[in-house]
Length: 55
Image (cartoon, rainbow, N blue to C red; front, side):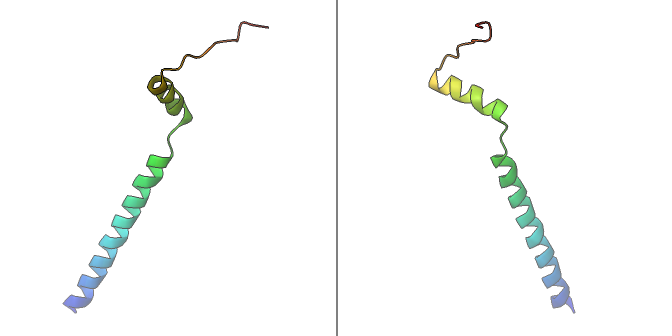
């Protein structure tokens, strides 16, 4: 009886760990583009030209 309960507990903990790890990696991949562009600009020392006033 005790062995059977232990296997259920181990199974539950294993599933919880897998869900937690999967959630971590999904959040890491979902970086917003608003954060990516300034990071690339600063790393590459790029300068953006604002042409909104040119018609």
